[in-house]
Image 1: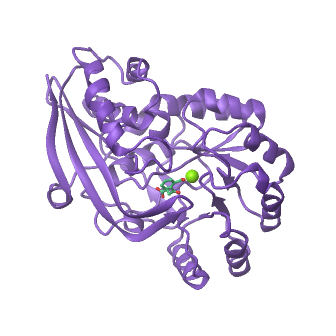
Image 2: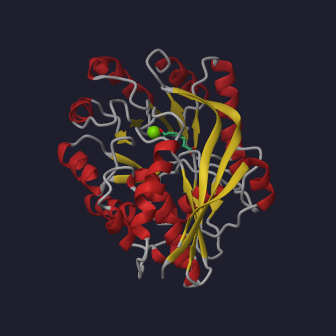
Length: 369
Ligand code: OSB
Ligand code: MG
């Protein structure tokens, strides 16, 4: 198949609750939906997920748009794609820029699955139809409000809580949550806010039976994470560090972590994500699926991918209404008994809501062939 046309919706969705992390506060999520069309008029959709500021990782939505328009789309010109796994190789000559690559790569996987008449999950091994899910809770300095929020999420059935932390906001909220919920599966995510000088402070986290500590140190640090993992009992999980299979191999070889937060966009798409899953299975390294505040399009992709049984630990894949008042797909995701159902339709299995896109999105054609 050949890609003959690419359109995009630039979307901004207001968040129900502002989301604060160690690096900033988000009140609205900007993202693009890319629509790729083949030579027969079949279409696939993918989500471009980076933030507007380069504060989670270096990519931003604007740098990604430049990479897509000026460098990635030209690589697709006149190429006969036999299988979507060829895209990662084709994009390899562009260094980094994984989220930009992923938006097109995942759209092409969706297109391919639709063209072949399959649900995307049929291309993965050992799948199930319901996914256990958790929720990531932003920094909230008012501990009463924090506990109220977590109580609501627990009542809704979320099977795991991830608390965002930063220096000065860690042991107190952890203790408050543990006091109220002694048996809750609880983890924390620092988004790179600590340094090796905080070692003795971080060791105190061992007292709270945390499932893991996600990304305490810098996004490109492997050595200090390895040092910490040697000295602490709690599992370390890497998020920002992991862009490629090579990063996983390095983390494993050095002992930098015992768990991997896998985000398909952060590793450039499905093909690299599958390699990472294979490696983690082989090495018995825990892997679970993270999120980027995706709309229903990215969320559907995450659910398809998380259908693989290796993802036993509940992912950052919450119901649509945890994030947004209104989603841009016709059937928003709901949580039931702590799980979300994997969509059954062709490809990623969701349909864009033209009304919601008219309200929140700007439509434009970015490539014709
Ligand atoms: O560090 O995992 C993270 C959201 C945005 C950017 C980074 C992260 C997160 C989350 C929430 O923790 C993930 C989600 O629910 O989509
Ligand atoms: Mg994280």
